[in-house]
Length: 393
Image 1 (cartoon, one colour):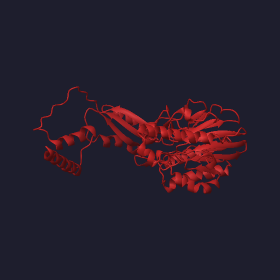
Image 2 (cartoon, helix red, strand yellow; image 1 turned 180 degrees about the vertical axis):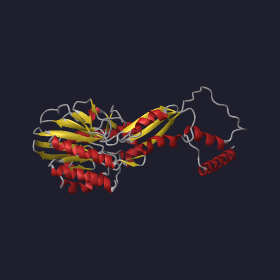
Image 3 (tube, one colour; image 1 turned 90 degrees about the horizontal axis):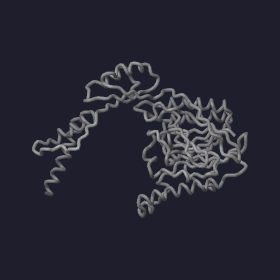
Image 4 (cartoon, one colour; image 1 turned 120 degrees about the vertical axis):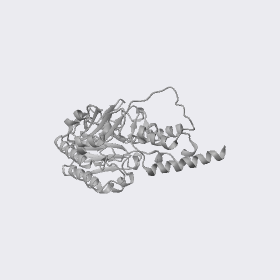
């Protein structure tokens, strides 16, 4: 049996005001072409199909057009919700999508509640233990939150997810290809630094031993960097379909192609690259050479982030950079030398001006000047705090 493992499409994504859905559509057309060319038996989509729980109509059009292309090619698909998707929305359209040959699951379920999806393919029976993203809100009760400390809550969450994963594995059969597909974080996974930080932190990270060894292949979503996880069963993150933001600049994107037969672990999957229509690139330069460094990127096909090392803020520099590369530059990050001092700066209370210090902080730390309205609000808050302190002393 031959399968494609993909995830983290993030349809509806914007980067610094630039919509990315057209780029993802380009990648999905290539994914569909490859699925037909490679004569795969099914496509596994491990979550985060959309960027938000209420995606724009164009994002939905692209996803459903891809599913219709698979249906026309008689290639079934199995999909689960990620942390960016709406679990309720996916469950609500599940019956409709099944008409296009797509089996989709929004909320986690036990094996006897529909958590195990079975698909008949030209090369045999495929069983997928489907584990959509499980938020702590669903797995921790109000009582848990009130009566458990943070460590107890983390352990309880991990135990519940581990229980569900092993429960799903009880539905595996010897006469079929048995796959686990999940949207979660495994301890030790290398992050691309573009994932939702809250959902990759310690609370949500599971030990690799939580994954059932009986699975012949484990298809993971959520982490954007394609990689293998060293556990008993062949376990891989397929990564995001495009370079989602500059934390992924220069990274190869694509999907995993899996060959597997009943009774044996999957062979080492092949990572097949999909070219990025608008690749992301980071250019680092100095004030003395930024024009020389940026000139080769005047006709760059993708988007740029410019990191420029400065000693002091430079008026008009942003306009000069955009004049060279236009709207290809989505982000400009000035970097200043770190000031290290072991001695605390002495402050003369009589000479201390909180308003001027506030403005200085904006200029030195945020590289901008506060608006009059912001300054006025700060002055108002400072007076309130000062009056409160004076009244209590």
